[in-house]
Length: 79
Image (cartoon, rainbow, N blue to C red; front, side, top):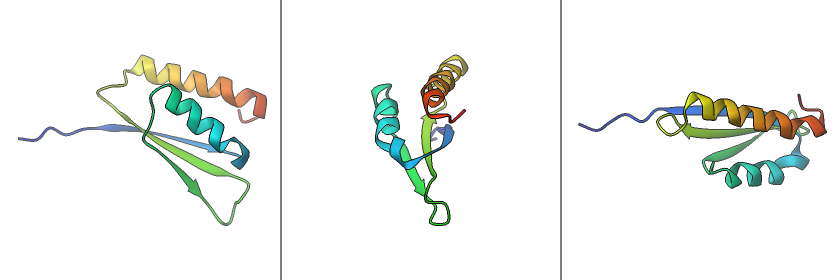
């Protein structure tokens, strides 16, 4: 019987000029399942979506990731 894999979805709105840096930073910490959503009606804002396997990311690790993203957002007034 196949086992079910559950995923956590991380969604983050950001300005286009941070796209490369954000994707690079996530890959640097081992997050490779990412997608960038573009909305034609709001070209000044993109949404990054990342998927984290629930069995590989403990609650503490997810909290640490959120803290890291908050620190990255501060210089760009994204908090």
